Image (cartoon, rainbow, N blue to C red; front, side):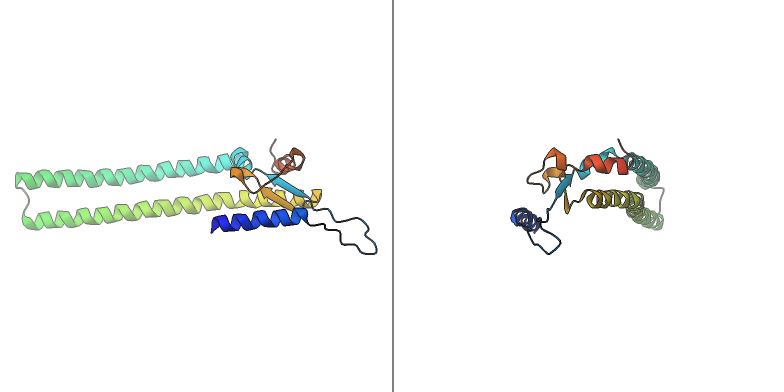
Length: 182
């Protein structure tokens, strides 16, 4: 499905590049020029200081969450180890063994729930940190397109959709200043 969408976009780009936009009216005698540009979004995202700051915050939160999970896991392991020793020594009654088994099962469920909560919280934090950055990037691209007369700007990262792109059409040099980057 993704390949079909990519092929359709490539075909559309070919058609748009080959069509003569020479519609004329009384005031207009020259054909309309369609200007294409491209930008490497991977480069934008990896070089923005705000992205680095967001990643540092996420990493700090991730490390703290992992530390808490490791503490829960250690407590569970310690309880299990003691229960095994007591069971082998014959200190526990059958009722006590069943009670400890239930406690361990509950601890395991709590651990799994904590792990899921950690992942959900990290995802929410990532979205909250990245949303304003993405909005800023989108605004910079929109502003450059309007200011410079681009009809289309393609993402050229990861072997992107650009079939032909001259350096003069690389709008990175216009977008970086709008994002406060060199």
